[in-house]
Image (cartoon, rainbow, N blue to C red; front, side, top):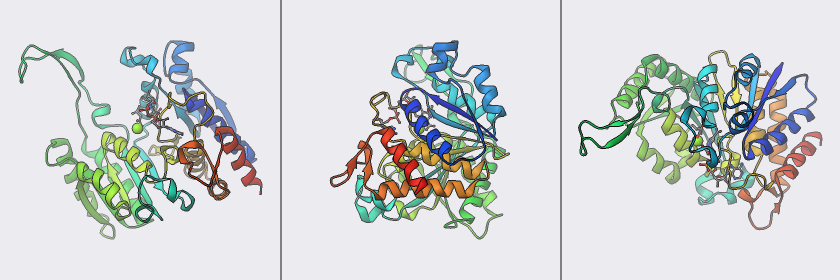
Length: 357
Ligand SMILES: NC(=O)C1=CN([C@@H]2O[C@H](COP(=O)(O)OP(=O)(O)OC[C@H]3O[C@@H](n4cnc5c(N)ncnc54)[C@H](O)[C@@H]3O)[C@@H](O)[C@H]2O)C=CC1
Ligand SMILES: CC(C)CC(=O)C(=O)O
Ligand SMILES: [Mg+2]
């Protein structure tokens, strides 16, 4: 078994170091090989996703990814920007199904910006389509307008699109997932305005016929954003497109206490996967040793479960995370009065210690 380890930029290197520490402490038989990705790869090789990094990821059983990006690369041509590395990995590996579980651990109920009664016991699963939508649609670019409010002005455009098989396969993933938990799927769209999402809604409704035991509701994305903070526990599984899923999962992360708590798994049809926290490279706190490594450590647990067939080891990690939270250890993003503030490495060390106990 081989894990490709791609730390990336900013806090990516700090949090992945803690996750690999935890993986090594499990004493399982797998090999880990690291490579540069994102801005770090651009600096060393002139490209954010060098062929060697892509090949390592393709040939591994699973990929553990940190985060990419930094403001200093924002002026580069788009194909050279660090974010193209994660988009390229998702596309090249066919990682269309992104699982983002938003679970509020009992010990963190007080860390959320929402009232405790709204989020205590929260366990929702966002399933985000990851290789289509406006993030990948062509054509895109800049041009001179020929119509509209300002003819002959400079304009920019992107293309939102989904094919029927792309919607069908992610809908099936969502219904199958719901079957194993609360048996309810909320499909989030903007069918009242966008043709792409009327199509999405029609196809999801059709696929639902094969899952009569699962309840399906449809919700517009603006309402979904509101309902997520009004009554989050009314959701079970949310399925949505790439862009809406990106936005709603950041919102949902605050229901768990912090974006530093939200792991993710991105799977292809062979259950090969890339595992990364839902957040980015956080340049504002990079290098300070204060980033929360738990989303990455929990992503490593998802990797053991989904790609490496190590359910017991996954559970051990999740139990260890709960244990350190119960001990009162908190990185600054989840700190509240009466708990103990720790840094990134101390949090990783505490998880390793909790594994052994
Ligand atoms: N998958 C990826 O590699 C992603 C990369 N990005 C890139 O990351 C860079 C920064 O983007 P932002 O919009 O600022 O999003 P971000 O998720 O990096 O940060 C947003 C806020 O959350 C905080 N935060 C994020 N992770 C944290 C953690 N583990 N512990 C404590 N606090 C944490 C940050 O300090 C910041 O205040 C950009 O270059 C962006 O393109 C953004 C999202 C995903
Ligand atoms: C580069 C972005 C598409 C990454 C992101 O924001 C995400 O996947 O959540
Ligand atoms: Mg995002």
